[in-house]
Image (cartoon, rainbow, N blue to C red):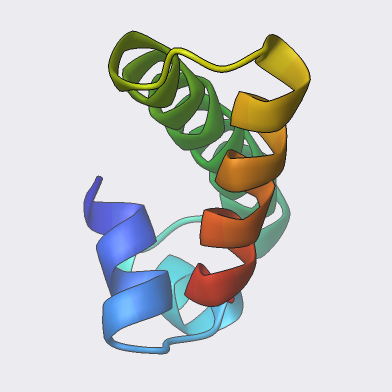
Length: 70
């Protein structure tokens, strides 16, 4: 969560976050991709629980929300 917060809320590049955390930027890029996928999966699960529409419609709504995040 902290990685996503720093990236989206603080608008910090991954290389800067990696530097602050003392990590290799390539490793953190991999972790960032995994964190985004985990967030997307959690969002889909929550949206599916609260939305009675078809799966494709839920996925489209999630896609729109993720686009808003940047």
